[in-house]
Image 1 (tube, one colour):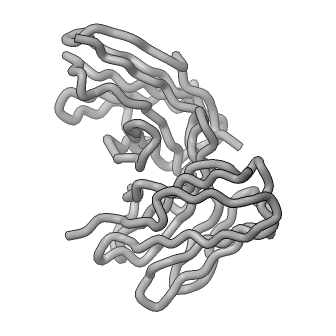
Image 2: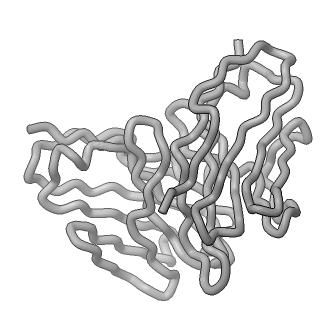
Length: 114
Length: 112
């Protein structure tokens, strides 16, 4: 059973560009959350998708947007990249049905903005 | 923003010793979770303690929770070199894991 997968592993972009990161949740999971982790910091919640809709959102600007597909996979889009967007972007999925306490994290996408 | 802080920020011990790290948070919670992260990669869930629990054990892990002080501690007994990682506490306000709020993390180094 594959866990949470993310692509690409690493990405280098230039200021002002746009980027799309992808996530496939663990089998049987229907909810996907995205986190940004700056170097030396803990992850910060960006938003969560459930049933193809954004259910919760953290304190991030509208430049950060997302999408969830019918197969539960998800994309994170960031427009007008800033140097401060350089970080590890983590995707996490939560099991569908029943209590959903813990999140299962993917290996992350390392984004560098130059 | 981070929910709270963990201390120490960094901890270096020898194999076989115990490691204790602490987490403080700011708001009422449904549960608190601890995660481990190796070398800036994905996080792995370690243990969850609910707000009505005071102590929980899982293998070599022992977690305590004091809701009156809004603090938690994670004890790793008989540490191994493989325990070298960063450890984060995460709070869940409503028990749905909809929006975990992570602390700043403790970086643990276990040497032989």
